[in-house]
Image 1 (cartoon, one colour):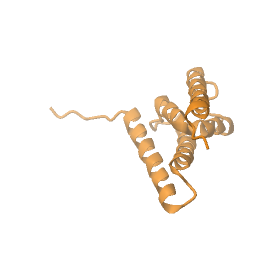
Image 2 (cartoon, helix red, strand yellow; image 1 turned 180 degrees about the vertical axis):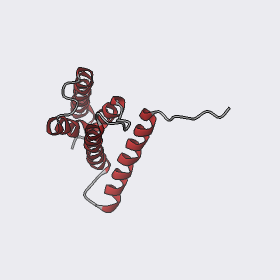
Image 3 (spheres, helix red, strand yellow; image 1 turned 90 degrees about the vertical axis):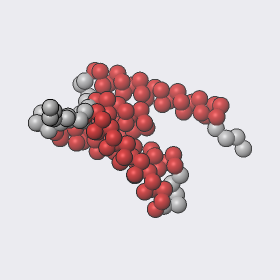
Length: 126
């Protein structure tokens, strides 16, 4: 039996996002002295988030496989909420989909909570 194997778009786009974010972070760290790991990560994840949103908007309504919502939300959870917000406003993409909006708001609230907890208890004190 020779079955045709179909890759999941979640796995494909998720792996692509991970590789691009990690590669971008490493590139920023290796080519510049001004970026630490955290800043390089946030720059990379935000750039990739915006690119993925723009690509998804571009192929919407066509026959090309779109980027799954899980991948976009994963990028938001990974720190790309700023770019996602800018992308949603400027591209007018994912603004009327209530399930995406709810997940986006939860991700932002969790990020704010983590930042607050870090600031209150975990940040280095001098």
